[in-house]
Length: 268
Image (cartoon, rainbow, N blue to C red; front, side, top):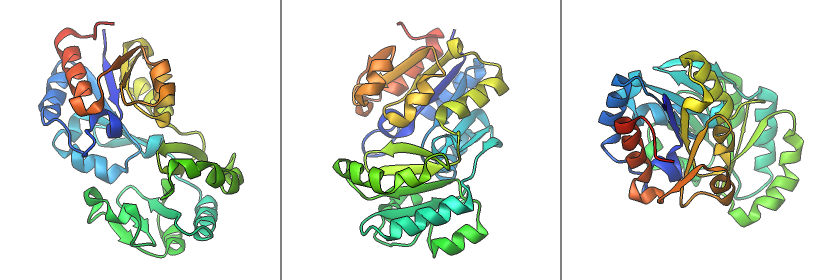
């Protein structure tokens, strides 16, 4: 019997255009009535996830920043900020590389220095992102995620070799998407956050179903007996999945969750 469902957002629950099946919100309420817990586990910032799921926030768990933050029904249970020292070093290193964007996230908003940043241009974040001197932000705010982005996948090797070794052991380095690296508090990850919520809710891994599509979902897969990847997932996720379903543009995750609601399990 599945008692907890956790799903990634981009490339998993969301379609390529960033939209979501409107039926997910009433379905979350129906799941709650059956005492099936629902958790969003994403690299997205807290403010964005709270906004998307504002109508059901009292019924769900949120894992944000790839695990640096988790809450249940709006109450925080895990908060792992990045040290100011690491933040300063990341900003200084990013400034040495033209075209490499650096952004900082707090619980309430994000900060950028460059108005050409893809984060600044992200439509969903309008009103939540501010342009500022990032060094000044570090002195005033608690930062939960540093994002280095703007490079293409084939340029990962030089970025990894030139910058990231300086942060080994000082921060968690997460390959978050195809053109970005996240730096956050040491020891976090989606899996750690999900373990925290499983403990709070009294749910075992063998009662847990997870959905994911990318490398940052690997730790999520380690916490569940039922691991589902859409067809568009990276090869490593598909290898570890107990089931591969249609790609995310076909609303396959939503439809799989509906089956769990009706039957209490998927047919493995």
